[in-house]
Structures are given as C-alpha cells and as structure tokens.
Image (cartoon, rainbow, N blue to C red; front, side):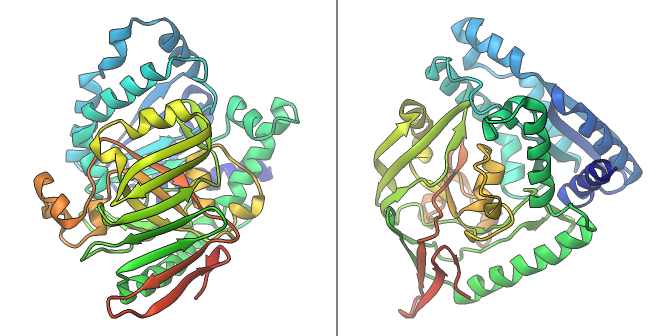
Length: 409
C-alpha cells in the first residue's frame, strides 16, 4: 500500500509539477516499454488535469541493441523526419514533453562507438529546431526516471533483480520528495529555497568563479548579462514547470571563451549507452585542448568532436554535496540523478534563458556575447566534498560561494 501511494504521488508530481499540464494541452510521453505501468498512471493524471491528448512514444532497448549490431552503416546517419516534425508541431501548439529516462548504462558497450556517434549527431541535427524550444523554455518539458531491471542491477549489482528494483524505487521516492509527504507541497518549498540562492547569485553578478579541489583547478568568467536560474522555469505564458525531477541545482552559463584550467570528473557519465569514468578535461580560452579517461576515452573523444561547440562549455551548475540525492551515497549511472548530487558543467549548447535577451540573439551573434552553441548538451559531474568555489565581483570583491562542497551562505 505504501508503494502504491508513493507511485501515485510520483506520477502526480510528474504531471502537476514536472510538466504542469494545463487544460487543453497536448502531452507527449517518451518512455521505455518496461515503464508502461507508470506511464499509464501519468496518462490518467494528465487527463484529469485537462489534457487534450496524451501521445506515447515507446522504445525498447533490446530492439535498439539489435539495430546497432545488425543494421547497415548508413542507418546511423539518418533520423526519422516525421519524428522531428511531430515534436516541433506539438511544441508550436503549446504542448508539453515528458521523458522517462531509464537507460541501461552498458547497453551499447559492445557496439562500435562510431556508429553511436554518427546517430547521436544525426538525431541532434534533425531535432535542432525542437531543441531550440526546450533550450529557451518556449515549451514545457520534464525528465523523470523509473527503475528498469538492467539499470537497477547496474546500481545494485550484489542483490537479485527484484530487490535491486525495489531498492532503486526507494531511492527515487526519497530523492524526489514523495516518501510519506505531500510531494507537490514539498516541491513548492524546495523551489522557494532554490530561488533564494538564485537571487543571491544574481544580486552579486559575479564576473569570475574560481574552482579548487584536490583534482580540479579551474577559472571561468561569466558573460555580461548572464542570469542564474533554478529548478522551476516558466513557459511563454508564465506557467511554471520543473525540467528535471529531481533537481538541486542553480545554473547559468560560462563565457564561451573564458574558461581555463583542469577539471576532473567525480561521477561516471553515461553517454550513448556507454560509461565514461575518471576523466579530466583541460581548457584554454574556453576550448578543450586535452582530455584523458580511465574508461570510455574513445566515447568521450567522439562526444567532444560532435561539432565545434562541443569543445566548449554551455552550462555551469551549482549543487551542494549534501543533498537528498548525494546523501544516499549511491552512484546512479543516470545523469538526471548524478548531476543533481554534484556540481556540474555541460559540454555544448548554453540555455539562452541564462543571458539577458537571449531569445533575440541570432546564431551568428552568440560568440560576440560569449554564448556557446552546439548540436549537443551533455552534463558531467565535478563536485566533491573538498570543492571550494570563490566568486569575484566586477569591483574585485571575493565571496566564498562553496566551502567543502556545500553552499557557503
């Protein structure tokens, strides 16, 4: 009974706080087949909230793997035009998008990385127009996760599949603030707390952030007119939504050409069905000039070489080391969870909402404002218990932003 109560609360949270469906809206749900019971609950809540229509786009990892192992090479250089057009049509009519992210971290470990890289690039090109809606909050979108056996066994390899799934559900309920409480009310309080920190950073209007830990030594400037945002965003009609469920971050954009130093990962990155771990990136004038990885180095290289913009950072996000997600002491092998347990950056495109009048900037004007543009946007985690961050204002005042991995204010 407790599990069913939490499951209902989680579905309600995804609909009412995640995408915050309004009467007459269309909702597109993208989900693995294994998550069907949860998707059914989401559909029911969406219709109860007044959704006009709920479209479901199913995927199956076994079929995905079969395709990567057997399809001809040219298959991975194309993406279905009708899928891209459907996404854009729904966005244009004011619809919302909910993604159930539950990837097997090792799904494509035996697949040629070039095939994966080719399809990642092809899909990014095809979905560029749709991503312009999500990157600028012109439509409501959200990501949640639901346990699958393959993912749960990666997280909890020492127990059987049934227990692994149960343990992962427990962790998700806790991290998403649905365990034994009114989740919608809990998220209202949480979003209010994040906004306090967001407002502090915007008031300070830092010119520079200096990162220092036992492994990371990095300095970055923030562009003029940069804006810090937090978990809750607003669509063009002023309706709030939460793009990530859960979230612990306050984020902005670094200046594209003003990042220098070395940064080390502190959690694995799952990208394209492969795990990249224990990697380091060296930046000079914003661009990656060197990289190493103990695991997944070839995959990391393919990611960096997606296009010119993927050699630069597009997001800087501040997340305390002490948070409900981090306190579980679980490595989730899932970026949605791991990035919200750790300060992180993102390779690739910046969110245009993170700079004043960003929506009005044309692509050929972005470099002049220090705004990165790319086909990709991939978060990677760099936070640790010994990470210090100092902000420097335009008049030279130094402010401790993070101390020993946590907020200093």
